[in-house]
Structures are given as structure tokens and as C-alpha cells.
Image (cartoon, rainbow, N blue to C red; front, top):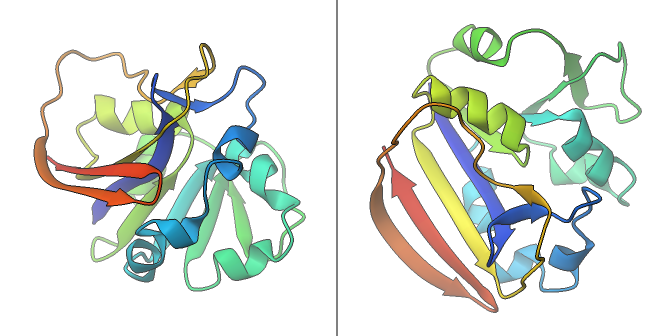
Length: 169
């Protein structure tokens, strides 16, 4: 199994604003201006937390955004309002260890899930896009507890207003 993070942060490192909203990102650009389509085409499974799911659940056509992957949401809810999303609960690390080893897993948003996986050295590739926005405060991308984590910078791209860096373990 290979675990990926793919997401965008503000220039000051936030995934979402202080209210856990990403309107600032939608106002900056679109996925058509990024490597999203090529990246997503390669994934088998998505994993996200409930806050990330809530942010996308009401978007028109959300089912079609994630139609070729198995989609898991860590939540205490027993069901979700979008058909192709599967609620799961429990330990993130143990759950992912039980996924098929031949799969590519995308961690969507969610610094809480990402932090737990980084603490266990389970993240293989980070696609970090930076939007030309300063939020001042918000939800930071990196909140892992363990010490230094080193990755190698493999690629740098510009997509419209976004800078994208690809790091590998």
C-alpha cells in the first residue's frame, strides 16, 4: 500500500480558515488549474475525516468527484448522506494497515488523520499545493507529535495561481 496526501494550503500553512471553511480556496482557483485529475485517476481509495466530508457533502455532483475510488470517512455516524462514502470508526492507523497492500490511498484534507499517519511513518508521498492567500489563523496542515520527518523534494510545478511541491519519503 502506498499512502498519499494531496491538498492545498494557504501561504501561511493552513488547510482551512479558523471556522474550518475552505471558501478562500474556491475563490482562488479551480481543480482544473491543478494536477488533480491526473493524481485522482491513479488512486484506489480515499480516506477523510468527518469535517472534510461535511465540507464537500453539499457540493453539487459530489458523487461524481469520487466515483472511481472506495471512499472512507472516519466518523461516529452509522451512515452518511452521500451514497458512495463509507463511514468507519476506530483507530486510523490500524484501519489503514488492514487495507489491501496493492492499493494507493489518498488522505483527503484532515490534519488529524494525516498527523496520526505521519507519526507512524506511513505517509509515502505528499503533494502540497500552496495558494497565494494568507489566512492569519486556521487549521494547520501539519500537527504530528513525533520529531523530525524528512522527505525528498521530487517535483515543483506551477498551476495557475498554485505552486505544487511533490515530496517522497
